[in-house]
Length: 224
Image 1 (cartoon, helix red, strand yellow):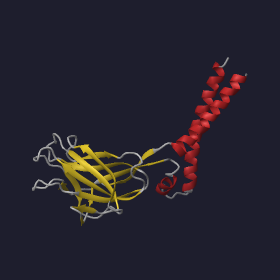
Image 2: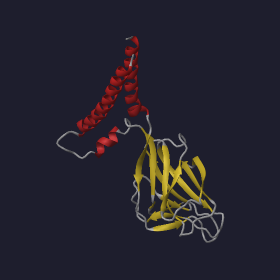
Image 3: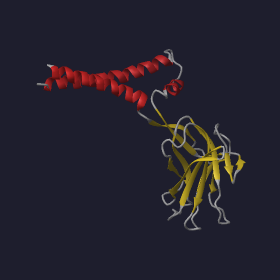
Image 4: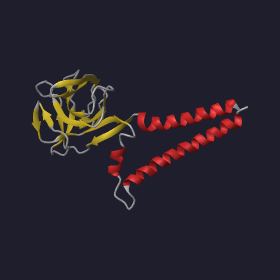
């Protein structure tokens, strides 16, 4: 009888911890902004055999985890070389890393993973450079000529240009931190958006409680 009571207390504590973990502790990768529009590829390596520095200012609501940039290789996949991504704040480098260029696919997004904790939420500038192994290999970043991205600007060779990169920004967050963003995206209905969110959370809680109930029944059935 004592063992059965101990198992029930343990299971209840596990259930409560699971709810706390899912809503307040567990981190998720959240897409903040995505731009798919593009017009022309901006070369990352000039005809004078010099690297062309292309930069984009941007913002991230939370700790940065990933940046995807739409690249082109002119249908010639690089055999070597590197892509260098730097992230700056007020001319101070917070993150600098080199990535292999030989996996760049033509007209596809290239994922630049950001080390955890290196870039907290805020406004920054990303700087992209290409250092080819073979001077004949060329890479480019896709650009849209109009200023659509509301949180930053495009720079080529340190000079501001009209338009933006085609890129995606991901950051780390919890479900609880995202509650406001979720509420904002719910269309206005006859039922308050607040109560819709409450209903959703209660549904998740009910599902977890049913799981807890059946596990408890199973433990009771197998207990000596």
